[in-house]
Amino acid sequence: MRFFKIIAVIIVLLVGAYAASMYYFVDESKNFKIVKEVDYPVDKVFSQFNNLQHFTRWNNFFTSSQSIDIDYYTPYEGQGSSMSYVDPKNDTDGEMFIRYQNLNKTLKFQLFEDKNENPTLVDVKFKSLAPEKTQIIWYVTTPKLSVFKRVENFWTEDRFAENIDKSMVNLKNVLGNKVEKDNQMAAIKYDSLMVEKEEEKLLLGINVSTSNKKDALYKNIVMNYNKVYNYTTMDLGKKDDEFGYPVLITDADNYKDKEVSYFLGIPLSKKFGVTDNNFSFRTINPTENYIIYYKGTYDGRVKAIQQLILKAKKDEMRFGDIRQTFIERPIEGQEVNLKLSLSVFK
View (tube, rainbow, N blue to C red):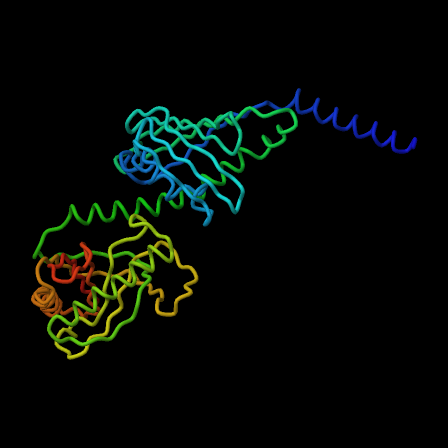
């Protein structure tokens, strides 16, 4: 009996020592700052923060779980917007609010996690360092914790910093695809032949062989584009601003053949395991291209392709595949909006 009393006294002393150390040496809440930079204009970056539907697509706090369920509430953007989430697998839930907005400069968030009535306060400031560079500064104040929970403050900053590091990778991928699309649309000059250097791309898509009879090829492209798009968005859970324009790769002069083979894919930022054997990855190496933008019937693209081939022969350049980038998604019965790229080399 005396032994148990001694053990009880020791436990009480340890608990008391722990409580005292937490009370006197650990703050009930924690304040810290995290600074990052991205190579995109401040208005493009800000719009990914002040719209919570955009925010949850790249923020690792939300994207890291496959079981999380999110509801958004009006207004969906700016001051007064809010959302709630439930993650049954990880047994967490919470609410997030945007309490203040100064366009392209400041946002103030409140995050209530689980049953905690005290929110995490996150003030995010945006500073334009150059036309194509933005500094993002997070000022974080964690919720007040009871004496026995204050030990969590030892790893809160590291956990938050790790989440931001992963989120920034996702954000750069989203902005890269979005800005690339915007820049491509702004740079379009139809029927003008230009030279362009293309960086490496990773495509997820499908290999196809089909008839080149009238309308049959384009109908087949539309069908397979829908397959790739549905697999990417529904099976893989990717959003439209997470990938680039669809690209069709084929031999430059196979428009004359009775049967055409092509690869149709959607650009993604990284490779991962694919469970459906119908789909595969293909890497496009950096190349120099002769390009021309074309809008009209799909059959009418042949004349534009012939212009590219004629230019390559005139310049005594060898050429490889023709890449057809669909600036607007292919739809049966409608005209196409294409960027035609012929890879050339000496």
